Every structure is written in C-alpha cells, then in structure tokens.
Length: 444
Image (cartoon, rainbow, N blue to C red; front, side, top):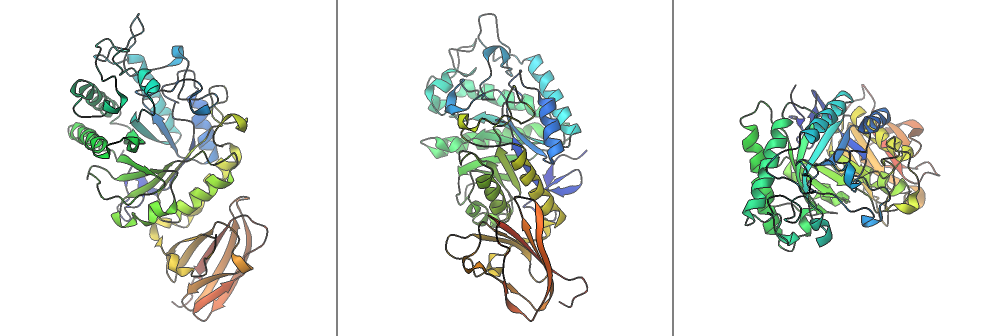
C-alpha cells in the first residue's frame, strides 16, 4: 500500500489510501509511545469514534520531568518505571546507546498497527528541543545517563553537527526507526519539535537538513518513501530556506498568515500544535477554521483530556493544565474535517478578495473556485450585521452554518445580477460559516 503522500492534483494537501484527505488531530501530549502506562488502544478507539485521523508522538529521545510546564498527568513525563526508550537500560540505570531496546520496538510496531487499523496517521517526531538544562540532564543522550558517556553537557550543542559522537547515535536511531517503519502507510516524519529556540538558527537548520538526508538515503534502499516535515516557527514566518527533502511545513500556534504567506510554496502547510490559549473549545476551533480556510492542509490540536488514567479523553480539571480538550472540541474539529472533505476543498484556493467588507476586529477567510463555490469563515459576527460577497451573476444557494453546534442555521436561494451581494448573517452565533454555491444547471 502506498504511504501517505502529497496529493498529485493539489500539493497543498495529502493523499491517504488513494483519497485526498484533511489530517485532523486532537491528540494527547505526545507520550503515547514512550509512556508504557498509557493505553493507546483505548486512545485510538476514541479518536476513530470522534472522526479524527491523526496523532503526533515523540520517540523517547526526549521526556519531561513530572510537573514540568504545569501539566497535570503529563503524558511526556512518565514515571521512571514506565519510561520506554529506544535504547535499553542497564542494571545501574544507564542507557546503552550502542544497542536498541527490543521491547520498545515491539510496542512501536503494535502502536503503528493499531493506528493503521483505525485509519489514523502517525506523525513521528524524532527529536525535541531542550527547553532548559534540567530537561537535557534527564535525557538518555546526556553523558551522565548513558553507558558510553558521550554527548555534550551543554544543551545548546546536542544538535550541533560538531558533536560528532552523539550525532552519530542520532543518525543510527533515525535509520533504525525508518527501516522498522518502512512498511506502514499511515506515517510521516518530523525531524525536531520546536528547534527554532536556539540562539543560532543556522546550526539547527544544518542538523535538520542532515537528518532529513539520512531519512531519504535510508529509504532509497527500501520499498517505500514517506513524507518529512520541518517545524519552522511559532505563529508565522515567511519560509525561504527549505531543504527539498521536506514536503510539509509545520507551524505551532499558527496564525492564518502562516498559510497565506507560504501558500506560493505549493507545499502542505500544517498547524502542528495548539494550546496555551485558554480552557475552552473556542480559541482552538477558531484557529482551526482560520488556518484551514487560509489554505492549510493539516491541523493538530494538543488535547490535555487524554491522560494515563483517562485514555478515553475524559480528564476535565482544566485548572491543572495550560490548555483544553475533550469531546466537545473533538466533535467540532471532526465536523470541520467532514465539511472540508465534503466540499472538496482541494479543488479550491484562497480567495479573500471575495469578501471586501471584512473590517475592524472581524477576520474573514475564503476558499473558493470563483463563480462556482465559496467556503467562507467569519470568526465573529460582522459589524452592522452585514457581509458583502463579490459574485458573478447567477443563482446561488446560500447556507449559514454554526461551527459550534455543527448544524445548518439557514438556507436560501438567491438570484444575483452580479458584483456585490449583501447578506445578513443569522444572529446569536459566536462564529459563522457561509457556503455560497452556484445552483446546478445555472448559467455561468
């Protein structure tokens, strides 16, 4: 089976099992593989029932200390006895970086098979930036924690190509993971999570490009090729330095400008992590609609309702976490995915000029095939309760949708003489979706 690939007819989207697809996640905090106490079968069952099709995992090269970042029941901070690492641990507690852990790879294979059976794509992240020195001191790659005693003591040098001994270990692990997982179609790779916090951007970039080349070279001798993502920035950035091995560009906490400014690259653009924006569904739902209707192709929310004790995503003590998740948000995101796929968003392109009346605090994002179909998202009620849409002459179905209740509010047919069509949105909704579609059989 051909692995997840770029959709040949529109390279802003991926294709999975023969169909163009919107990848949509509301997933746990990346520890489902490395945290041996976590029941990922229940987790995948929950995602599949919700209608979501993506999860993001860390490999175990990075883990967090319990209590880090004020995250209750942090999935990335397993109890020491539950930590499952790519390298085996010896009797004295150190990790042997010259060997691989059979138990880890057995869990990895089962993890991938179960996700595969549920139709869930896995974004596997090889490495993560070290946010502080204590986190680096907790890593198997720290010289105090491995049998070989290799690796820099300074976290800033872990991903520096001049640190040859530990870079060789990293490359060997990438080769091993890529080889072990080559047969899976529900997979793509990311080199590193948030590597842009480094004081010297070029150093981390050289290292990422090197490991991307390791992936490509390893797969050259294997049957299948998988997509590779690069995490370039929080919020937004104009990308100008992308190695050709990368097909997916990941942003965290993405603004819609991340899609607008980089749409010309003709690559898959992803809002790869959300969170830290409050304890309700609203900011994350709005972020998803804005980014995907600005031309993005992947959305991955960080859902803190999944914990070791509640792998079904029912944890709800939001005062103990920096974000939000749960059934209501998952339902809203799944609705967004269905909406985009049912309207074949990959046949459309950004077309904000269709709505010239956007002003003030309101943001309007439009994906359109002008004259045929317009998908329009309003992140709040418009001023003067009026929205103007520029349309050619014709007969159109006008449909207003509530993305919170996930239902149609109002539908009508309007005959339009051309140019500016003024519409009055339904009242009472926080944000709104408008679908304007030319009537079948109407003259162009």
